[in-house]
Amino acid sequence: MAAMNKLILISLALALTGCATARTLDAAKPGAPVVYAGTRLNMYALQGGCCAADRFGAEAPSYPGLDLPGSALLDTLLLPLSLLTAAGLGV
Image 1 (spheres, helix red, strand yellow):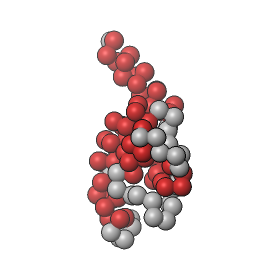
Image 2: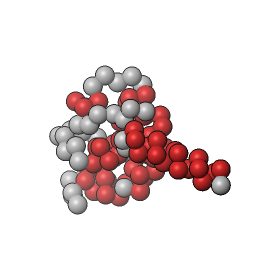
Image 3: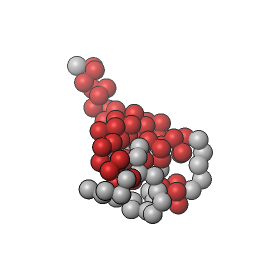
Image 4: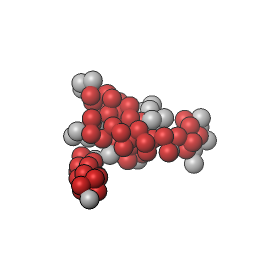
């Protein structure tokens, strides 16, 4: 039961910080990265990037280190679609 409580707590924390992948999906900023965009946004924020909105079209989550694993997983699941979009064959 303790493991389930931890999972619920982690899920809640991720939901409260905002998902970088979800934020970049609807950014539609010309020139913004598409492939692994949420993961890249988190890494940019962790490295002290100053202008996430200018570069990615979306603000970084409040806790990018906490959001990183979930964004990496979601970006991996969405990889086929993002590759098509990057190739100009938008879905």
